[in-house]
Length: 267
Image (cartoon, rainbow, N blue to C red):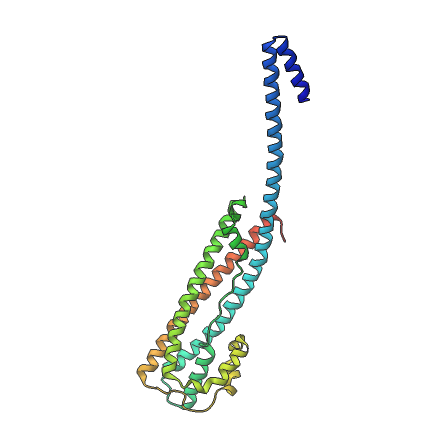
C-alpha cells in the first residue's frame, strides 16, 4: 500500500500537481500515525492485562500470608493470656510476703513457668516486602485495598516495636530473679520448657516434679520481694499492652482479608 502511495506521489510531482501531492503526503502521515496509535493501544492493553495479573497474584499471596498471620496472632494472644493469669497469681503470692517454704516454692515455681519468656507472632512479610520494594504498590488500582494494606503494614511495625519493649521488661525481671532465687533448683523445669517452648503454657502443677527441694529464696528480705513485685507488675502490664496490640492487628488482618476477597473474588 505504501508503495502505491509512493508511486502516486511521484506521478503527482512529475505532473507538478503540488496540492494533490501535499494531500497524499499528509494522508500518508495520518495513516502512519493512526497505525502507531492503534499499535500503542494494543500494547497498552496488553501491559494492563499483565499488570492486573500481577496485582491479582499479589493479592492471592497476600491472602495466604494473612491467614498465617491470623493464626500466629491468635496463638500468641491466647498463650500470653495464660501467662498473664499465672502472673496474677504470682503477684498475689508475693504480696502476701511468704514465710513458709511451701509458699516460697510456689512463688519459685510460678516464676519459672510464667516469666520464662513470652509469645510473639512471627509475621509473614514476603508479599509486603515485594509490594514495598519492587514498586508493587503502584499496581493496586483499588484505593481502599491499598490503604488497608498500608495500615496493616504500619500495624506490623508497631507490634514489632512493642515486642522490643516487652523484651526490655522481661530482662529486668530476669535480672531480678538472679538476685532473688536459687535458679539451679529449676534446671529440670527449664530443660522441660526448652524441649518444647509451648510447655511453659502447661498448668503449673505439671512443673511440680521438675522443681528440686532447697532454699528457693536466696534473698527473702521485704525490699527485694517488693522490687520483684514491681518488676513483674511492669512486665505484666507490657504483656497486656502487647496482647491488645496483637488483637488489633488480628482485626486488621481479618478486615483486609475480607476486603481483598470481596474486591478480587478470591476465596
